[in-house]
Image (cartoon, rainbow, N blue to C red):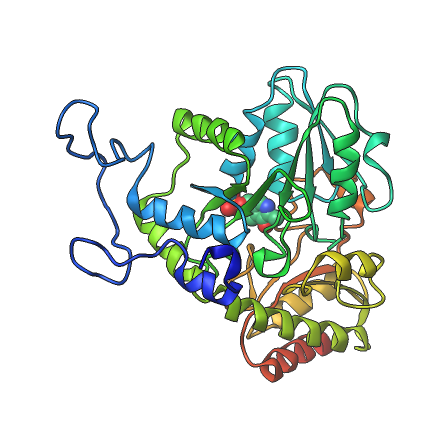
Length: 387
Ligand SMILES: *Cc1c(COP(=O)(O)O)cnc(C)c1O
């Protein structure tokens, strides 16, 4: 049975993982080695140096490719490494169109590093405008993140892919699928050329690794991406590769619970007297709920809401939570709460942040897999104290 015919719950447990041929060990060993013995110059078993390939990483890459229904994957030292590797495909004078509410680190890389190296990025609201409103003849990459961070906007992947295909230069369409995870959304099936993940988040899921991944169906593109990675580095060590592989085994179970808990909390928050507004793609009140239903199998574990009042009220809430931990990042088994304006999105210029709607009363939740009653009680207590 090929990976394509198997169910996601089976793929996460088995893809890439084979008993070790020399010992029968059921778990992939951590191959802590930089080099490999050759029987004759250039004659080896597929491994010559660990920047290029490493067996623990190969197992992880096979698993990662299967998660996205892709043929190929590269495991990386972080999600930002993936963004940087993709940008290395471009030439001076090339142009990128990116979703406006993009991950803060992605925006920072585009604005403060790649702009200096001659690649300009236009940040665009692709929820209701079309790609052709922003693309030039030099547009070689289209950067989609959906749901976005922290406003959870939904971009219609198929629509943007179709618009990109109409451009004569055929820009590469990238989807950052970190927020949805491969459990809820499959951008390669919707026509994207490459999927990016910060495996730091849901894919590893245990808040103990920083890592990234790129997945694609296109062997030519994979070879170009691997050439960049092999040239600049940006590889995960074998121990990190092992941890991510281990995290993936429970991805389906975790995502199911993240999704259920978040859906219930979002509905409950929407009725809470201390809450002004809730953004969650699964709610009918979400402006792109129809698109979310079309392209996602569920709505994920992230909720954004606006607390009634101002920064003081937000602060009181954030200092009062006990089960939720006040911390950056997301996608781990434990529930986290974040204040984007001061924490995760501080690197975005303040005017841009304000224009996007990342206000001082905006709070982002990464809903964990704990008991829903405990999460509700914790939020309820902190919300009451906030007012
Ligand atoms: C965290 C994150 C990244 C960056 O990944 P790192 O592993 O922190 O480098 C990129 N995109 C999104 C949506 C993220 O949440």
